[in-house]
Image 1 (tube, rainbow, N blue to C red):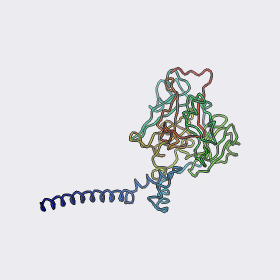
Image 2: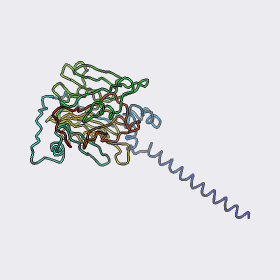
Image 3: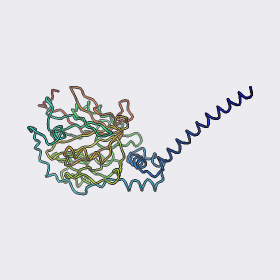
Image 4: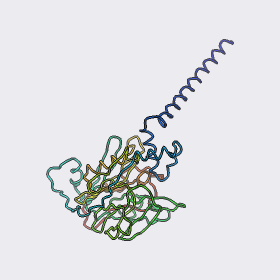
Length: 355
């Protein structure tokens, strides 16, 4: 009997030892991944956390302030300082082409039957997927504030339905002081400063449309931008493409991998609204370098990043039904976040939309 008990004890000790070995091994692997000589994970983790509004503490939990600073210095976007050349936008899309230069050009210029206002395009890359809405007439894109701005804000889908929007996408950055819904930076509406909020240090500047419906990216003050013709704009960034030239990138571009919303305009005036899904096995998200490449493929002459992460949301009426066409990762029941405003295409008399 004693021998049997000893054997049982040895068996139990042996299993426990294996458990400890597994735990220790996992701890060593995790430590190696986080603090080891290979910087990929560290760069990805720090740049992703530090470009959010509310999750920077993740980076500070694992890394020192000096390591975070060094990582951000080695991974960043170098934006163009050139002013937007608004004279290069000519508003003459060629919808009558028999042949196209590329599949990307065909996706933009070949309009869907039964819709001469906009088109929804599926886009994807190595580890990401998303939606792009092509807006044929930039004068149709308006900046619309939530009726609950300053209080709680509204989900994009709610704002869109309340305004009978055909297309809608999140616009300003957002933060919530004392439970209130506020924009980040400055917002211009109808050629006047409409709202101001917490300044953000994310590169970029004012992103919006002039009275002539040209997408203008500018680092000037709101007063100067309005003097230059800015009609409706939000403040965010970074700027990805300016006057046809992509920004320069060091390392991974400094923004990690995440959901993104972004806006661009081609030289023919067509506007591109992009929403890239993230934080899922089907689409982990996109880097700024990749996002700039997407705009280059679709020949955006000017393009900029907007608020992403949980704020990223894109709405459109497809086959007669309005709803979200991306997969938001906010905190609401539908994955949405309460937003202060949105870019919208509103219905007009004479619209040819039958699909």
